[in-house]
Length: 332
Image (tube, rainbow, N blue to C red; front, side, top):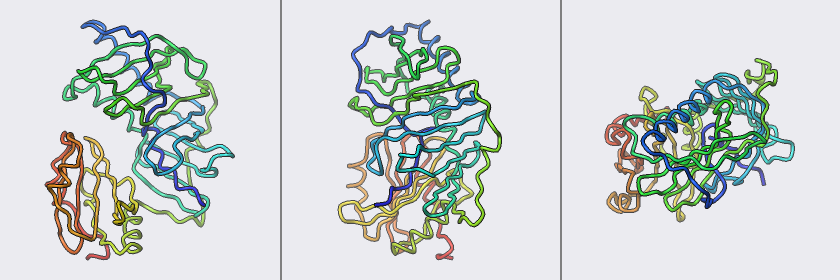
């Protein structure tokens, strides 16, 4: 059985952390402490943009699409990032290079290079949103110091106003680079993580590491992948216009309760937007009732298929996005 392509959002990621909420002593932030912790997070934001390093990190996430835990070999300097995988990894031979604008992902078993929007800025954007004036109110606190990858770290916990933990950030005491991050769901269960196990800030880094080309490899963009999947699965190739502020990140065909669904994931400045396509009709009210309370759903049937947009209520208007959905090459 071939391993599924790793869709590592770990630079963002994607992605969160491991341990259940520990029972530890916290230093609650008063007015002054709140300001200080916000300053620490702004320092983490700067370090995420600028820090050079060579290291290894363990990424864990629970979305059912592949191995829940894997190791990445990371090289980064400034806006550039390279990810490789150990010899015993199910993703052995895959290489990812992200230059802050686009991400190129090489799959050796297919001799393909997939070109995607950059994901390196994802953790930066999330920290920006957390610290922004329009962000939902949060409480910040600092836990007892510990170590990650053998380095002392400061541990910042982010709770909602009811005291429910949303994430923990483990920042290198010296430079505030995030060495570990854990995200939790609404009931406090960890849903993903990254944690550096090795880190070298002094390593010499060759700029050639951030060039990913291979003669003879097929180069695929997400839009080409949607067209291929639509043709293979008997769907129509509806997509959000490339002229919009949304960037297509990934597409796949899933099976939900025996129904085939063409799934597209878009990135927007306000968060992720999903576009689902099914060949049958659906009841919008039933979908809205089953959606999370902080998400909106928009359903319409422009042709033979039914299209469903799902996105955060704090994000862009789904009705306006629906107006930007258009057919690809086979529909013109």
